[in-house]
Image (cartoon, rainbow, N blue to C red; front, side):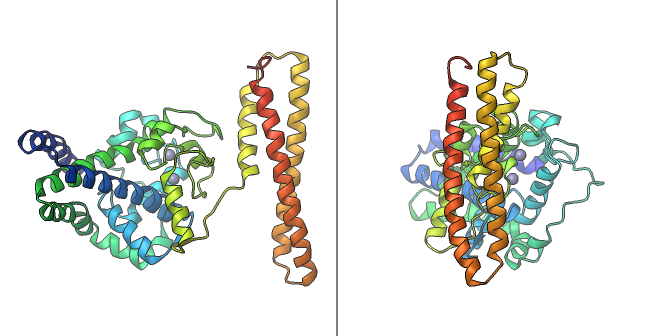
Length: 360
Ligand SMILES: [Zn+2]
Ligand SMILES: [Zn+2]
């Protein structure tokens, strides 16, 4: 069924677009609607299926969840429940035979082969009890093909009718959009496990790539994501292109999302420091450079340990309701802020030394 469906979608999406272009010419309406529907569907997969349902990195108002589930269905990538079950298995079993889109099987398998091949019946689906208890998710799973057809095909076609271009609405915003969204999502399982850098961890094949982030609503910072999967951001650094993180933050600002989970900056810097250390392993360095690196690194590790201890004390004290504890919490907060500033400064010194001509 998947082969027939994906085959038809590609033939109608690509062949239909060429025929539509020759016979009708591209209308501005169809192009704008295609851009909007592509963006909404990608964001529904990224901020919805992925970060909200599969990883629970934030909480969202039921209206937001409904919209994300509706446009998620329009991506025809299964229900949020099935998608999340596969995806949680991807994280827990990454790069093994139990990873549904195991990149060790090759680029094409991770990209699209896993969708076309019959899945191994002996593999028990990863339970997603939290989502199976969620009435909206259960409703979406029950009616997912219908919801997908209405939101993904019928609505753009009807909008096309209203603006005098039904074929543009159907072929471009409906079917060609689906082809684009498929390959965007598939690219996270293929390219983002093959092409790019590993700034945070080399425990698995995941990689960070700006180009993949550009086409996928920010999902291309995949090494960050595999290292810190509970974080609502994939582009963890403030300047990194991640429209899904901006959408979630905007929803928070207007009261439609809350409890956004963030990895504290020092924890991110600790991961980067570890990767720097690994890259330095086995490199021929002068004794003077080695000594300087060693002293900065030791100081940084001490600062990171101190920050960790402060945070642990803060968490313990938070459970204490006494007035004395509350006063201490304020002091601790200031200490933690100071500790973070020191760590950032020390890390900047460390990175500057790594970039210096003697080490470059
Ligand atoms: Zn994930
Ligand atoms: Zn992955």
